[in-house]
Image (cartoon, rainbow, N blue to C red; front, side):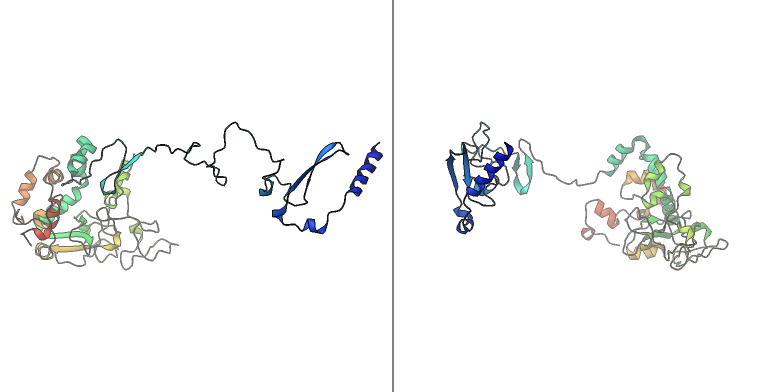
Length: 370
């Protein structure tokens, strides 16, 4: 039986005529589908032109084929459907445009505000409320913390007013000192200013007197983490601030570098040829090597326009903060009155440029000049 069916299949294949060359060379646009009924085999047959894409259901030529079945989803197909992106248009099937609700309403001067909200113009404060904000942040500990933080600079300012010798650490293009230097300030060599030779207001190089120290000129360097902007170290439990040292990019401290020349690192195996600080100044955000230590007199600072006398006190422009630094209390100005009654006091009619800017007056508009 199987042999008979196989022979009949071969005979049907032989009886079919071979396609002509013209039929194979037809263009794709002329392809068509021919449907005819074959009663000999007892079943319907669909005969297509021999084409490599005619039987592909995903081909564009199969769109008109009766074999291509469309799924009936029960919903009419939107004529606005994008066949490439597969996303329908915002317009509905009925062709009506829906009402769009604006969630952002443009205001004047290019400002955007949410719908239903009112917009208030942002006006900068005429005067910075530094003291109320700081007092609210620290509470009752505000005055003691400020006094402890500025004790070294308070000491330096009082000594400068009484002796007439001002020692400051600043950049060359600045008209103010970043840090006031006192006798307890530390030099790059690791020794205090009190361990160096005597100095005057016109001293240029103050060598160190410590034994076997190669330092030939005092160069101030921060000795507390707050002076380098690392104030968060004080909050660590069990932290000892006396162990802190300013470091170079090579991760070695300033005491491990030579105090003269380019200050090469002395650690064995370290290729550092010059000290380059890995910290910034807390007052100007510049590196240590961009600053210099200067010794000046009252007359020198007066000629160059730098603050001196009463104006040299920390927070001279804010009387409340100034009294906190001097006495630890906001309502106690006894120390300030004692200092300003001396021969180095500055009249109130000659404020500094910084004081004028904080008061809202430009320095060039002030009738008072140095």
